[in-house]
Image (cartoon, rainbow, N blue to C red; front, side, top):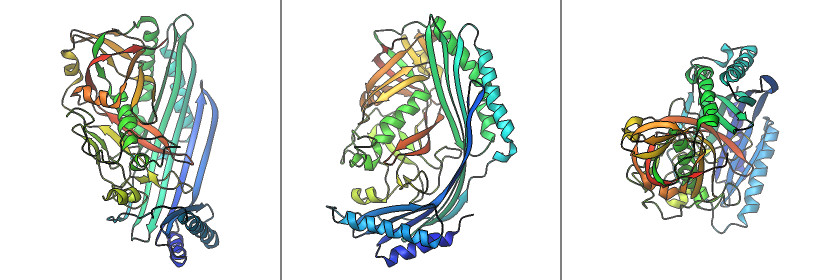
Length: 479
């Protein structure tokens, strides 16, 4: 149970010490994790993080401090430390920090799971992972499954945030996650590696939704076929249908990250990287008219779901790219002040020890009207890259490379046999500019997005439909 009076006490102390702005966030994370390798438990535990984070603006500088001791004396010391940091920093600033005016929330909300975490015992959760290992092992016929790692994760995040500008928000969001990493191999044919993370806000009902005990063995049989049956992809220029999993990753990396206003302004340059987007590029064309990318924290069930950010600004969908144009950035109140706009509610903190910084939530490519069959039917010769095995992208989020895992040859509008290790290597603009048709098969994928110093990992969804790109030369990765 959160003692909200302690947050108000922190504001009172900060005001008395001369803060022109103060914010207090009591933040609680209750977590359970179970990890298993090849059917045996290698780790499990319960993590309980509870404390208060305090931010202040003094003399035009920002100071942040935190403590896990929720008594008045400890909170007073944390506030004094934040104020002291701000005062020292103010002597080095060329321009004072200001927060843009915002319509702040005064709200109380929670996500109600349809099936509580308590509906399964610890033994049943362990048995769930053991059964995954059993089903996975039975799926291979000729190849071997030498490595199979799985983890189960549940988290309940409870927060009370109050600030001196009038914002006051209490929230409770439970989240569930599954992760697996596997290798299918044959000494004479090489190996295939696959990892996947699933996650949503809610409860155990998502285990029924994911049906991993059914889908994973089916996927493993495909990976085995890749070893024995897949051929090299075409070497000439072809049309490519990019599956929703790859599209989701691309929009996260080459739209979401470069649209973070703090990254655009250079704050992340020595930490998470830079951005090809520069101040003043709103309205510039980045892709075809078929390209719209949205970041929306309010999607029910989203792993990155929230209704108010950690500055108490109401969440809303952000149209980062709109019909091929750079349209909007992700803002907190500081960057909004620099740009002369309102914050769009993108400030998040991992836990009480973390400063709220600009983060993505549920970022996706807006679906179109084409079925997968329609995307493929007029392709004379091409490739359908459904999933990926590995990827990389440069610091500015411009040049990127994706190695396909499950991928198929397309001939005369029909899916043919498997192709192995096709490589899609292109720039951000060339990808978005090459899209001429967008599917309606929107699907979301979970991730833990890293950013900041000290590093913060927050839950996100990234997603999209399948899209078609024209006249692409694919590479091929070694087996």
